Length: 173
Image (cartoon, rainbow, N blue to C red; front, side, top):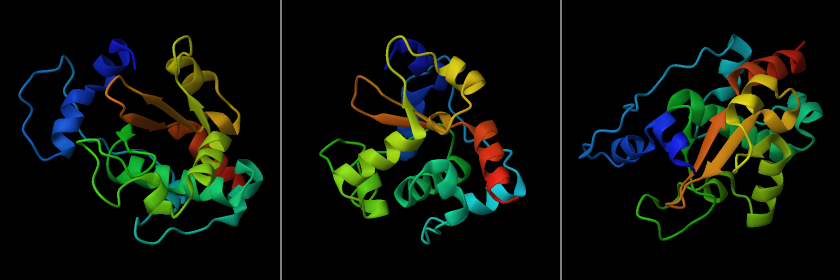
């Protein structure tokens, strides 16, 4: 992850906040939880973490059951925690990792199932890929979720709220 992205989102402060520790540094832009402006249908879709509802109406957009389930959980975390947020792909030894809190554990997916589901609805932000351009100009399903991995091996996810609202509303017409 570039220093610009770290600066944009104040991720160091987010790490400290998520671990329940007070930040010992002062990033240029302090991280604060935000309320998303999701439309009613999108808000219902983002619902409750313990129950992962399957919305078959979205399969026409996502292309698969697994991608729909992954997208639903991204929407949940974006709505109930923050947008963007970090989450690990699978169990690991990272200091920020908490047992049971990776995508694979939460969704019950294998490593391959997770990668396939994420790839169906996501764009990885790497050097040369503009997050702003994907958010503003991305209209296909792969622009629904943006993600990047920083130099500390922390993967951050960002829900493209405007595109998500359009996709969900279209699916429920």
